[in-house]
Amino acid sequence: MPDTTSTPHTPTALRSTCPVAGTLDLIGDKWTLLVVRDLLRGRRRYGDLAASAERIPTNILADRLRRLEQAGLVERRLYSERPPRYEYRLTATGKELAPAVRMLAEWGLRHVPGTRVPDDVAAAWSAADAGPGQTAGR
Image (cartoon, rainbow, N blue to C red):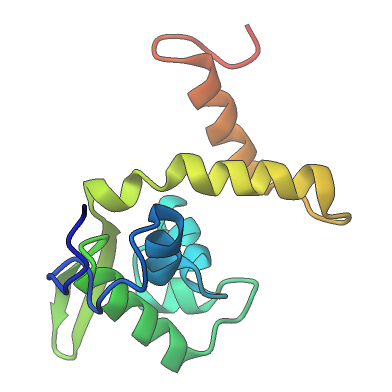
């Protein structure tokens, strides 16, 4: 039976041993997966993340980045000392969310009218689907 106590990667005790519930405790709010989505798209700096089309409030963005860092999904790196400014990158564990984010996007395309995949994301999906050493569309 899994341990439900707090660790550096689970900031609070889990509410149950269900892996879906535990995952939702980490990333299941309205904003967190959108931050992960943007990090997967290569956005690194706070201002770039704040400029997302969904207009995440800056206090919530700061909180979600802190939570993701505490959970071991994001790492923060100083890129300017005066004033102190940071870049954010997904850790290997955070990058493992990419297939789940893609599956949610694909589900949304099928079932949520008016949604679309941005061109840069569609190109990245095509390249990934083509596999290493192949070009999309062959």
